[in-house]
Image (cartoon, rainbow, N blue to C red; front, top):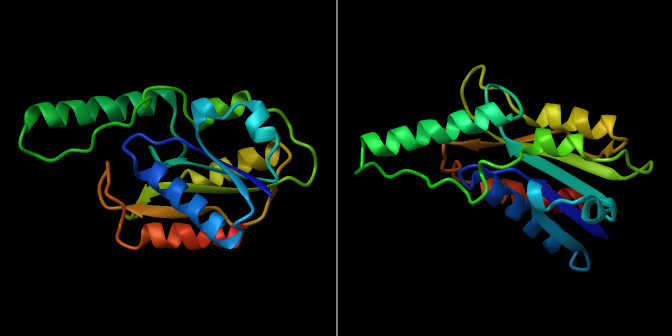
Length: 179
């Protein structure tokens, strides 16, 4: 079984969830070949060979990120860290200003029928926070993928994180169930 986990991460939370999902798949299916890929690494050849595609990203403005929302998030973080040098802030991930999941879908080809897929996001836990996972799932379906699980959201405590206690264990269990 070949698995591709494609993710977008600004402050490392979504990357951590993607890695935990990979650990869960690996635990459930030790024979699985797993690629855990940032969106800029997820070329059509690597993704096209997968039997299971898992895609995830952070939630911005109640949905998938865009170039504008990523830029706004990074600028806000920079302003906050400049204003309060003593406050512990999360550093942006390398390549955070690059393409996101929404952009990546524009270059994704339609798939052969029957390739399984799943969608996840990281999100805040407050009323009307929204989530990106349902929009990612719609994009996967529109590209011909068969969803094998309901879209899943993993909770962060603050805008930049950290993840809520227990979320990485939950992500690992979700990954094991997908396999």
